[in-house]
Length: 467
Ligand code: ADQ
Image (cartoon, rainbow, N blue to C red; front, side, top):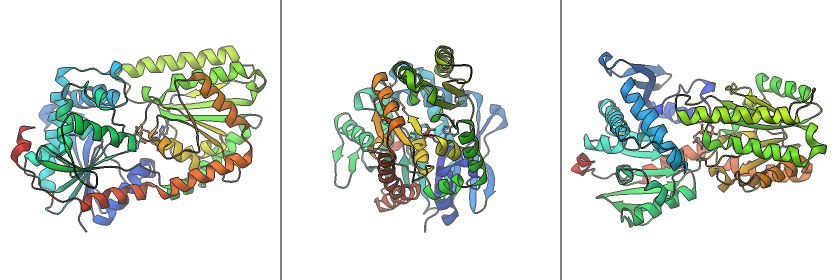
């Protein structure tokens, strides 16, 4: 069995539960192959301190990391990855900052990764590169002579061709994808965007089995919707920390039904729109007002990017206004918590909540939707209100699907969810759990790696030097 080498911007120690399902699943494959995980250490150092690779052994898994200089970090991470690719890939051209300097830093860090990784590779290694920070990594590796099989998975959405085309150098980005052997997306929609782009903008030739030919190379493209580790989440749900959280929430909110939202504080997650929908619900249903409380957890995220500070203020002021206008001495409609909740406690909060509001404006997949369902009591489950713009909506058809921009429609869904009879809740939950179990994170890992193993390894050719 070939050794697996996972490459991502940040790495996680697969032995730690806090790392979450993705790290656990990747850790399992890495464990089986005695693999390596390569990425940024999370440390910013003085450029003069050098860029040696740091190693750590996590069981059979080798963790290899490099530090970044302040200049590289700012241009690569804050600038191009999170100031250009993240907003545009989430359809937010208005928030993109197309500073010409950023792309050079993005390339520099990808070249650094390639330079540092190449000497660590064995001839029959299989590489799996993750996410938008590292789109050109395979091209940079190929330029240095790397012949190994390389797959890429994009965790965030791929926008339609005309939105993608707004990025200066978009053709360079997509050309870089052809240095991979397999490119995976979260949903059919993202895959279709890729196909339309390469056909119309890159004049790629469609071959059989999802393969595309352009720039002297063939790449296979497919949709591999990411899942959760259902078993691991089930164990977490029944572990003491989650149980204690569940009991506490049930006690504290014994007279109310809980609605829950758990997100990173990010403009893609639709938090202000969600608050407005909840306000609309309170306005329209005065008789139900005191029977519902919304707990919104928004964990701090990328706070040094300015769009995030604006969002923080907007959300704080909306929550304050809702509580001010509708609150009573013994009841606050919204509990807004700007903090990360320990992973071990999340299932308890999910299980105690009658409704989950997962209403992003755009999301690659959204694992919170799946985790919420997995944490429910199958005999008396809660209701998932899910944005049709989350990748998860392609799979979870039995959720109450909403358009998060449509305040009235989302408010109506909240009412429906709170009043839904147990029989209907059970049926919907059962159907969605079948999907979540069939397409769990192990299915995702295996199906991606099987598809990668089936690709024909190709000579990479010197053309990549010109990227
Ligand atoms: P994210 O945008 O981070 O990930 P998501 O899938 O919702 O989004 O969450 C990832 C994990 O973080 C989940 O396990 C969740 O429980 C946890 N999490 C989120 N908010 C939290 C909070 N406030 N406190 C504690 N834990 C929290 C990106 C893409 C998604 C895609 C994932 C995986 O944007 O669309 O689903 O990668 O591919």
